[in-house]
Length: 223
Ligand code: DC
Image 1: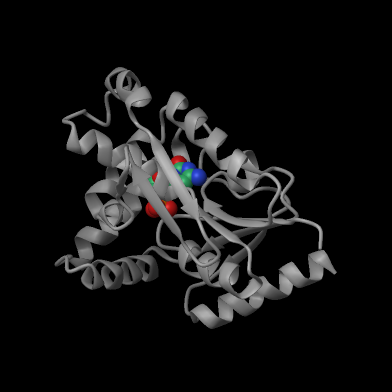
Image 2: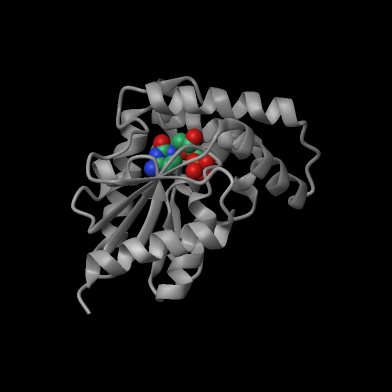
């Protein structure tokens, strides 16, 4: 079978990573979570006292950040300077820091290069914000997932509870709204639906329904 690339973009909490991971497993292809890479840069800044809103300060430490990503069929393990940070990058604080550093062009260039290299010579499903528009513009399948802010906040609260955090619904909702604003209005490769992407509103849909819909689209495109 010819290698294929599936790009899954959408705002925070739209269900991208949950469904992309499961589709990767079902199709036996590599899953790449690009948000985890921005979160890793954010985490490094938090741990080293770097202000994530200070572009100069973030750029000055970029070369000190060595990221190794082990992409497997059903998931991804990410190492920051040799330490496994896969779980550590999932906190709200790392998410906020990720959204901050993601506006910086030098950060994006460094990570996009890693992402494109990982997609070479293999079939992948990659999720993020700019995969269909910028990282893999020739992807065979492009999906743009969306859901209402309410629904996305509910999902995020569930994830944070599972991580042992104690989230407040209104606070999470406000953070999602702010993150949408930040990700959509930034200058470099903002969150945007690619012209040739299929948009799916996952509000009220189960994970299985979303997976079935995307799997049908993939099957149709590659048959
Ligand atoms: O998908 P996520 O919530 O883990 O992503 C964290 C942040 O990283 C998100 O707010 C914006 C940024 N991001 C990005 O700018 N481009 C990507 N391809 C993936 C994530």
